[in-house]
Image: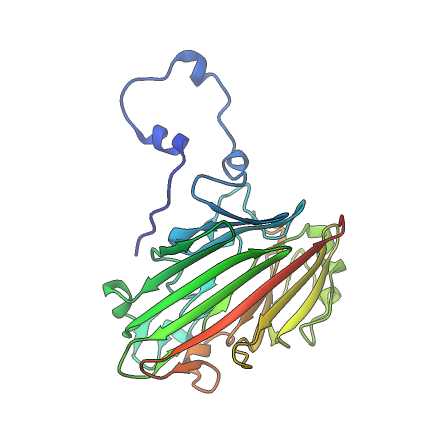
Length: 307
């Protein structure tokens, strides 16, 4: 599977052969990675509502930016540009690892966090505040996940909110098991991690971890809504909105990186259907009947201290 991302003008020029640049241009200081990563980059589409800005890289269905007033809520890998440590990716059809990498129902292999972020999505609708994207089954997916499906995501900017709706349509003649999850990276300075204040998930204590050397990587029950106070920034609510009175996201994985890793100034509160290997547990995953769809909605609400 190959990902094709839009290149900046500078990237395209550097790959071209031919005539040399004028001497005065070659002597100029090259832009840093941080400058290339300034929002919005050429690959990002921008959604707005009032003081809320959302960035989306549509070809990989990545919510790359969420900002309310001056608060940049989602982490941007300014020094590395690492797309796997950026924003709010969707992990589908599986969150995290499968045991031995095997999808037991079919005896096939699936990558960690699924293939959704590795394949090109198509924009099907776009407005000032909303974007809809789709990924349908194809030869690349059938080899390891042999179902006919259409995944549809709608990302919407509201006043202080980001709403992410995922619809999973099973076009197969058999039940389609699935266990997706969201993996948001919330920007937070290393020194502020132990000072987080949260209403959940139940059992999580920010002061119980050595954030520099042994940060959390634990699943907790997700009570469908938690509030997090991020020092220096504001109050964040992470909530699943019920669909027809039904909730789907039962687990919240809390995770971060040690200080020795280049991208580490974030904390992840990840609402997911099931924890590691969940796709192989029929009682924990979603089982979509033939010809039916399943929908779930995640909403982030951010209130900066400056407001």
